[in-house]
Image (cartoon, rainbow, N blue to C red; front, top):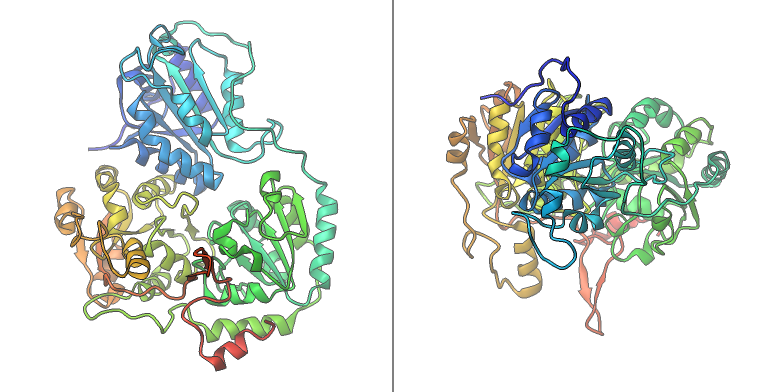
Length: 608
């Protein structure tokens, strides 16, 4: 079984509007259509079959997540999701919400009932499977439009450009775009050739950005005068820009940290790299960030995951500058930002690396000593006999992976947080997660998209058994397309993070968090076998299990069941306590649990 493949370009002009729309998408760079077939997209799907690589998915949410990761990974071509009316749209809303929160491109083309069957303002439904897709999608899209009568190419192109965050379109932050086409419009034999009306959209125009030259000059001055500067690089700095500027960035001598979305923007072995701070970040990076006297955040929104819930104590010694294209993020009021700059982080970074800076050798030497004193595998963690240590697993994976590998550490739970704490990517690797929505079920679907965007490159996906169960049906998509995808299931018999919450805050009153309290999981080896995908169960040695290295090196899909202790501890972490008024208060970033031994704390917290 193989997916639909593109035929040669048609020699005749489009005979109906749906074919013209597909032709326009091809002209705009789209190469892949991820879809779940349905009656209300029949004309669009018929047009796509001869012009695009059409990949059927089992569930719409997986198609949407895969399209997001396909585009985010920066491979050749572009992918969009094609879904039918009603449940097709409602099933993909989670994918659109995730892309919205991460500011990532995601084009969703939807079907709709005939325009003559629309319910109008007074009925819930007239057409079969009809639901108001635009109204549902509006809150999580930068543009949403229903096409009841054919509209011309410029209007379609304008909507798509907004989703890509292209300049000159009135928007600057990428995000999902939803366009639903009524069935009779799809089948129409005629359509306009020029713009006849302004497209209906969601969202607000972005404010004018600041002068980049002046912004760069200000930030260069801030860096030069600081004794302990840090440049924090986020996902707003593109992979292409980071790759182009990598050597120049390191040559500046300025210490660099990354956010989770910017994790692969610098080689972890670079002399100036100081780690990834976060609520679930590396302890050494958190401690160093809190002792910086200048923090320049480039292309990161500085959300609560990045600053900690106790954002009032974020970077308490530093002058904070934030460069972001979204004025709303700059004005949200947290954390403290002394120098908000509304500008493209890519342009600003180009200017920053072109300047020269005094060497901050004492700061870098201190930072390296802190990194050495606080290993990525925290000795406070305990792993029961017979189980693999998740921290050691990621350390081993980093050692075994090559420079062209793609790493997808799912989007929630221990498989995600441990990966973002312990895995340090090398130059050339791609690492993608989804932290904003943090929905279970993202890992496998996202890995499929990334693998399809980069044929010939190996992709790793690591996901907990609870999250994997939510989209396990897409193993069919992996098998049919024979993807070089290595699937690691952290099998701890349930939702590890929920179990920990119920243990820590409710005295171990467990409910619906594992197989002992109502959850049901399949026999994982039989599941992979049902799709004819080879699989092996690792032992307590994890990736050092005999045969694991060979399985990793063989092309094609392979499953690995990693036994994780249901009582595994996950340190370090930010903890909270109940205040006298009954509220919750979190510790600042540098006060992760467990407490450090006094002699180590005295050294690593020197400036605090």
